Length: 302
DNA sequence: ACAGTATGGAGAT
DNA sequence: TCTCCCTACTGTG
Image 1 (cartoon, chains in turn brown, yellow, blue):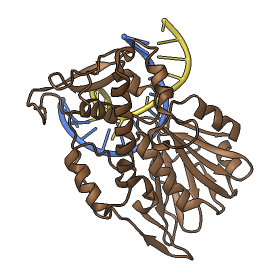
Image 2 (tube, chains in turn orange, yellow, blue):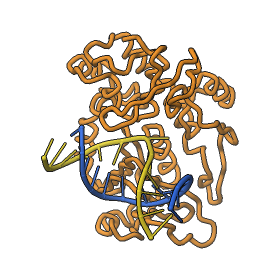
Image 3 (spheres, chains in turn brown, orange, yellow):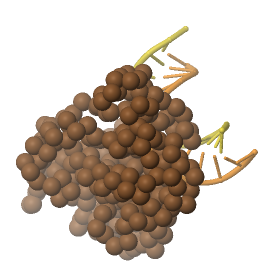
């Protein structure tokens, strides 16, 4: 389910499965026939993500740009023997000798130029999963935050302020820092916002490594153990599945192998249930068209 | 069979 | 603030 961690994990999987080799690209569903023709037979140079945008770079300066939206999925799988017939509405299928990838339900699928990639990234705020790369500075988001009276909860979902955060991470990071979701952006303490940024920088790589949103301290402790002290940010997300081996065949490398977590959060979708910290009832309210969840007693900070 | 829901976003009003 | 789009799955009749 697509927040930023999903896209970065997916980029890693696609990169590992397709980079450096020719790919056949089709549109079994028929709604991306022209775009697929532009890419079909080209060598894949690599794949990466910024915020919730996915970019698959093909030779000849052709870039497949995908946004999964609310319901999109992009499965990257091995094919052993015959290629399986497409199931459901497969808008794009990529295939090489060993792997195939099926895209369904995406809100945006287009072929763009490297210049258009830059323009897309320029419209986004800094991405906590891109920390350390040029221009990806939380100070940029802070400048935007200080200029708006919209609630901090809305700001966290505004991709032009901070890129990659969705409804789950938003609710959870606000709770983790005990921030009142309704505080106007311009009333949020700089220290609070930067603490949330730093927390996202630490949290999102666990989401990438495990393919799940992990926000409970108890989960993160188990996750750290599973990685054996390795930095999740240095973790190769492609290890999450079956991938092509060095020369033919497949390998399944996965430090987090077999480690799955119950879907469990501090506040997300827990309306009516007791707060894990203070026991008061978790509340919910529609805010700018999205369900917000928070603890009215714990979250009072600015 | 149909309604409702979902971790998103754009465009109209 | 509303309306629509994208798809799969769940619950209801």
